[in-house]
Amino acid sequence: MSFRNVVLCIMSLVGISASAQINILNAKTPDEIGVKTEAQIAYDNDGPLPYGYIDERDVLWSKTTWEIIDLDERVNFPLYYPIDTNNIGADRRSLYDVLVKNIKNGDIDQVYADSYFTEKRTLKDIEASLVYSDTTDLGVEQYNAEGRVDPEYIRRFTLDAGDIEEWRIRGYWYLDKRQGELRYRLLGICPVANEARSKAYPDDGVDAKVELFWVWFPSAREALTKSMAFNRKNTSQPISYDHLLNSRRFSAVVYKEDNVQGDRGVADYISDNALMQLLESDRIKEQIRNIEIDLWNY
Image (cartoon, rainbow, N blue to C red; front, side, top):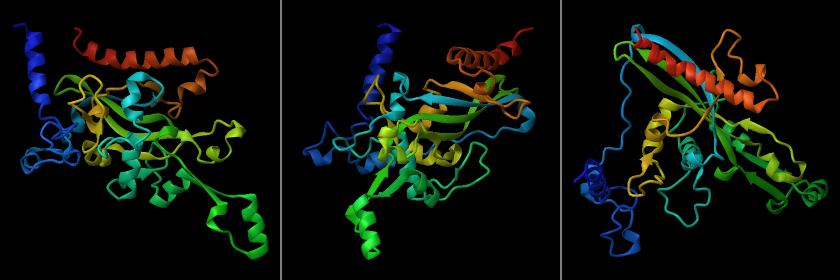
């Protein structure tokens, strides 16, 4: 038997005990699907893999980059879908829904206004950017006549997973001289979408994409480890969002790096030329990769 067949057999055996469709083969009724047994609960180890301690003296070289994850790219679909959750189980949610849910229930509290994590935002601040309320003309007439507005005259628009167009991440590349390898540490993640007001007035055609909020990624790892992303290659082996993001299983474009010009973005010095901006992003990536290659060249 070839090595490839051995690997496939092992993956098949492991898939039997996977958590994507827990208990589906032994369920007597549909209600039992997804319910873990006591043995499965005791066996599970759902905590995130801890980051190892890195001494500052071991960091030989470093660079901070900001990247855009375009959700129109097929490879990034696991971060976008599902957007319609009416007919699927509660264990499958998009990355946006997972973050917002855990922000609301308090499991994620390190939320900021920008990628430098200087201005912390509260749940009330977040809701103000995700929800837009408007009063109809009949509501205005009622308020002028009676001083009050009935709920049916108030329109409420909320951003959902389908409105997210891209994710922006901030990460730290560094060369660990003790291990002799190039490593990456994700620091922050941010959903980007048009303002909620654009859903109230779609005819305006205004492209008002904004950074909704930045999450300090290490504080969100516990929640992201418990939430699974869809694995297109093997549905019986889903991966957690924490694993997906830490292992960089996505396609991204660098739009900014730390530099002497105050972290000037690529679009600031290459304007109105998308092709050249992509080439500049590739140049930055290649420069980072060459650091590790140069380490072993004598």
